[in-house]
Amino acid sequence: MDSVNRADGAGGAAFAPAPAGDEDTVEEAPRRPGRAAAWGAGLLLAGVSAVLGFRVADSDGFTPVPQVLAFLPWLLVPASAGLLMAVLGRWRLGMLWGVVVLGLVAWYMEPYGNTDAPRGDAVAELRVLTSNVEFGNGTQGLIGAVRKERPDLVFVEECDHACATLLRTELPRADYPYRAAVDAAAADAAEGSVILAKVPLKRADGLDATLGMPGAVADVQGHPVRIQLAHPMPPMPRQVGLWRSELGKLREYAAAGGGRSTIIAGDFNATQDHAAFRAVLDAGVRDTARLAGTPRAPSWPAAAPAPLGAQIDHVLATPDFAARDARFLEIGHTDHRALAITLILHEPTRTT
Image (tube, rainbow, N blue to C red; front, side, top):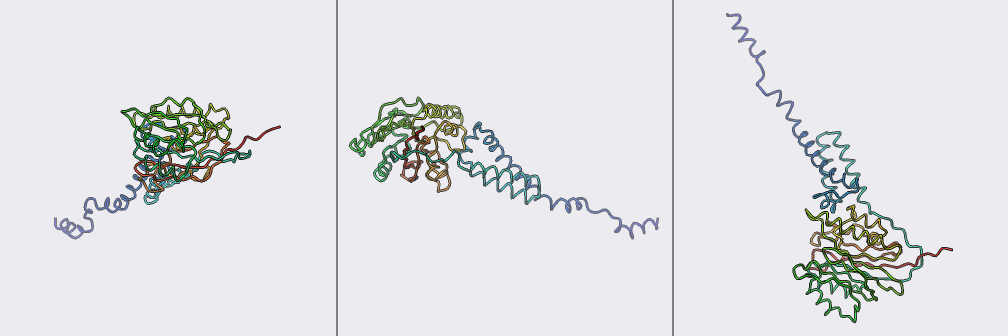
């Protein structure tokens, strides 16, 4: 018993088991931050990848994908954060994933569509202005912008009865003798839309849509130009299908031009990152803000400081137009910036 006791006493310290959990603590403690970083990277990169998957597939998907696609350039933020967390977590697959995702976002930030210059001689010049005045609230600011910019064509969205009356009073027919309009219903100020013109307008059918989208044919120094105001419904939850359908009507209008000079201007509630908007461009028109060097200047929401926001207000034109002097204007009391741009009409090249 003594030998046993001595062995216990003398050798007990040497053979005593380590306190429970010590080994786990030593091995696991350094790994926990890395593991958490890897998990965070996976979640961020998975979210960005889900949205990019629809962009790669040339689809707008379903809510919330269309809403997020409007701000696609800002996916750089979670993508960069995901890559950084993968590096901190020493997650090699995540690092590769992050690099690929960042590359795709950067690739799709490039402006969409061609910028080939018209080949014929320049025959006419038009200053065009489009503005969503948000239920008429920005009308007074729009009037000030019109007086300063002196546009030949003015496209006004969400122009209620008070807006239409103020435009008649402050911009009389002596200045803008030609008009095409869809009157706002008493219950919905957003339905009203007006086209004002210094050049003669011939009546033409507009597009049948939820909000007013009037159209006309302008006589620009003897050259007929089809003009159409755009204001499809926004891609709100539960009405993405309606938004896609009304952008489809604008695509059909562009495609029906048959090579005739065409201008489509207004609040498209869509950016170049939406497949439904790219389909409009592919039907034979170009985004003139890109031609003028401002492809991603934000127009909504106006309260967001540049470069935050999305460019959803556009002036589209057929390839016989060049463009310059694009300006996005703060007019006040509306959530949109107005867009003013100069278009130069070129005569088609003659073949012998």
